Image (cartoon, rainbow, N blue to C red; front, side):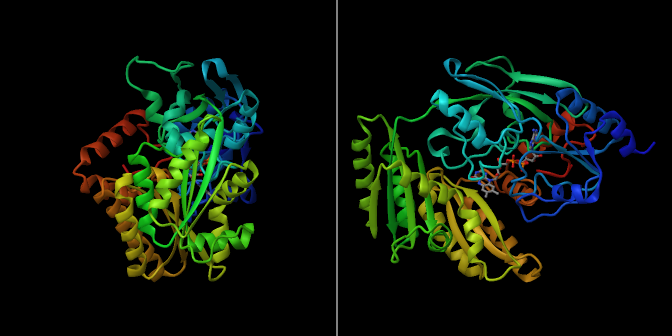
Length: 464
Ligand SMILES: Cc1cc2nc3c(=O)[nH]c(=O)nc-3n(C[C@H](O)[C@H](O)[C@H](O)COP(=O)(O)OP(=O)(O)OC[C@H]3O[C@@H](n4cnc5c(N)ncnc54)[C@H](O)[C@@H]3O)c2cc1C
């Protein structure tokens, strides 16, 4: 019996083989298109995941776990001879315990659904990638997602207390626990955070949750130069003001939001800086005053202040939708927007942003800049026609140059989108540049130990 027929026998009713139903799984939100998978499997129990892994392990078939498919680096795209494992039926929040500050969720739960459910407890789960409407618990853990609130709360790695994981050979481990601290050997929970599905399948997650801030205030400051934006953020941090969110938008992004979201920005502004601060009801005004003073030091074109939740939500949603709004600024239908993602220490932001502007000009590209600026994270949104070789070479060169500029300033080639297929070369370059090749070698050796047949999302992060 062939592999697919046997798979159907092992997991009756859970295996998709029709081409037209498999094709949507060949792509994610990146610009990579993968191979048609051998099959798509949609299990609804850990037992079924175990059976699938055991069978694929003995047959040497690659398995690509898939959450919301919003990866921007091709990490959920299937390579040759792969089974896609959709976790969409693992969509339940199993437990919420505010008194112990944790929630237990299945990996297919969408982040917005998780947070909507936590509202009634007056708690939330802080990681907030702009894709939270579609991104899942499992996918965001596997990319160590950041997002808008990472400035105050850090990235996903700070919020995962424990995991249930099915390993490549079908065995199951439980890491961490329902506890806020544990010091019992190696931190294997951390090993699976950011592993991009290359070490095992997450089937359950114990997540730390946090009380919703009492009061939030918003400042919208507009500047005429990019380094003023960077300097304002660095100064804020130097003085101990850690914004809840701090997002910057360039003119192309503002134009796209005006067009698609009907939000008006001052015409003379080249850059917008959205800063939210959170505190108690008693002290929010004072904190906003202090923050505004710092923003004013860098001669903004104008500045507005609000605590109106509806107005704040409108701008927040607009920022989260900025990537899709940017599509309205394409020169033609063939153009895609490729999102670059680098990070530097806050003090290096002004110089890095200026270098980014220079490199955009030098490479002759149209690039919109926005990002989670309080944690030094810059997204370069590059307009390019994938079929235009010359332009794509310029895109590659721009991404490599920006990656190396980030490394030069003590940062990294990837802040929150992972490595996937897109940044394998950049990861090698970073480890060479930092004279840290042994770290990459250790990662490869860990992969070989846990996945000796290289069947867990093989070909992602690095080649063996
Ligand atoms: C419009 C847009 C905005 C974005 N904004 C942000 C942002 O602000 N911050 C940010 O960090 N990212 C952002 N991203 C990137 C992406 O959304 C996030 O990385 C997200 O966390 C991925 O979740 P997902 O469920 O879609 O994962 P997928 O794309 O399905 O998978 C991502 C990786 O996780 C693995 N995986 C999925 N589920 C499991 C599982 N159960 N077990 C093991 N491995 C698994 C996959 O194999 C793959 O390697 C954005 C993407 C888009 C399209």
